[in-house]
Image (cartoon, rainbow, N blue to C red; front, side):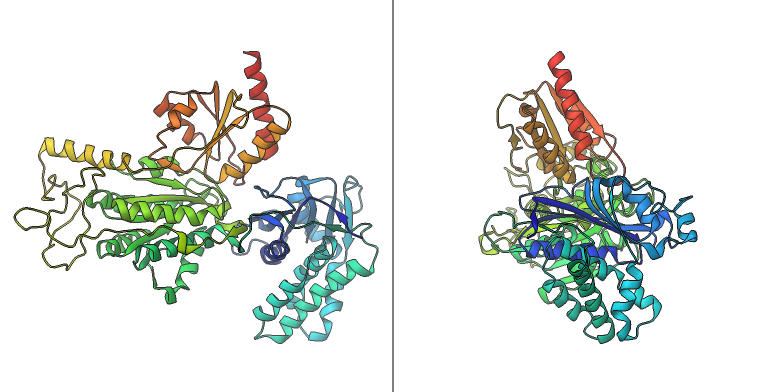
Length: 614
């Protein structure tokens, strides 16, 4: 009988051509279908194909699956599948002592060892004695399993990942049926490749079943999750579905203007396949053209959206400012990555917050929303579109590479229960003399009317020059500019956002941890560990970064110390210190990875102990 375990962390690692992303994704999908909660962490080089066998060319995919709710991809690996010496060298330090490392002995040639920086073969020199090493000739086993299908050497080597997946699936009692069905569909047009991959997958399972390679087999029971229909979803997929849903709720066409940029490109790919749902996509020649087209679509009465990452976001700022001046809806999705400049395009970071808040010329406030998990990207997209359409403003949605590429189970919402979005298009003149005043404002929200060009009687003009209050004519009057600048700021400040949620079960906490975006998982896990040690601690996680929740200042001033963990050098901490005059202390790591739960836990405990001494 398999041994029951609560949670497992597995990482597949190899060359970027070894299929590690596909392999890990399949293990995650199969685990989700068996009812486990999952969180995944893809990690791959920016190069399309880095030098084979090099440390810089290692690609990996981590899967954390459990019988309970989990919020991070895990840290200490239970199993590392290293397809070559370089993968072993890069990822061994993450494997817990006593964990299992599975590796392909055929790859430990003198040349590959040299590429990985090994002077001696680690499989033979005793350096791996702290781990359970399963050294198999995966290449030879795979070759034997697929020999009958007549594939060449390279094509045969590409099926090694399926053999590894089959072996790990056996070890953790995963059902192969979903992946078998996926392979039949994926390679339906190439029977030899299809059958070879199926044979390799089954061979891996059978190897575990019929040999004594592993002394024990494991099983992870299904998680207890709220009742409903679930699907595995990545952040980019969730964001795309959220944008589509918002357009449907508003009764508008979704228009995407985009230029391909890592890690946001999958949004363009995903939405370009949705023409049957009325989605119109335009791949522009550059970032500025993309946002200009999206703003033009909004002017014409569509839901204009553009997607980008840090460098592209910088280029879009002038056009976003045009949307600020014209007060037109526009949604800008910034999937953040490590910078500056080209930086590390496939790695995660939270370094665009200040750019989102203040990266434009002049006084140009815009609402800023941040998603906290892959599935939360759906809700963040809907919220952003609602604000943009109902309040006539550009809105920035912040995601990042970890959220975009990572995945988790998503409870599919009941769309019929979602509140419609009312664009409130102007339909008639709004002045006593029968003309249309494009900057006549709602007395409560200060929002101006949105008139679709071509509507009889609502002829008007818009542009980037300063507008005369109410009428919208060009004005250089000093007092008018002062008034309009304040109006633009005030109307954004009036946008209603939910109060910040305080998580302080005991009510006795003296320290609060404040975060935003994708740090939610790491912070939540660290806070939970601290509480399990019997120490009270509070948590506040922000979704709306402009305008900030009305109750945030009062919450922050309740606590003696405020810790702000971020994957930047303290951008939210800077905002909180300036806005609320609290001693917000930053805690920062910029490694291109999610924050370490163990390191953050240690820091929080040290902070609590320091507070006890004061």
